[in-house]
Length: 232
Image: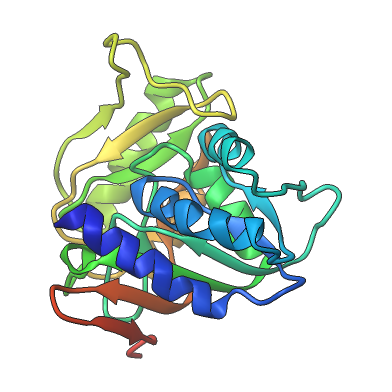
């Protein structure tokens, strides 16, 4: 059922894609569902150009014939459509389960609007049950990890912070050549404050807290599509 709901959310997102748009295209299973419904519209003549947020997304777009550009060539975008690992009522997000959080945040910030698409399982009252991805420089990993632990203590957060591994049990390496630490805090009552604190840690390249970026969430449930705006 989850795959069906992701497809429904992707179809609903097409209503916001207009001819001539410069479109940020996200990463992950829900974003891939959107790409698969976008591609037939492009084949029928929908005139858009996309900026992919990962090499995985780039490959799928190229396979399906979705035209692409880069942020260097097109530094301002009209709309980004992407998924999320968690969404709270203020449309704060945890992203980065697929390892593309740095590029996803750069693309979202370069866009006039970001719409997040998801199935209803991603909605939460408080972020944090999903481990927070923190992309870090490989150099000084132990020192950076220790400083992240200090940030967590200061924020009254607890839980393991683990180095992400790939299928071969080696450290997962992002498209940007960095590692990811997954912080299992369980509950993040003040995501904005934590985002600021993590941004101050030398060695942290980016983190998966997306605050103030999404203007809408398209959420597919069993019987209906909901379009949510921030409840702030």
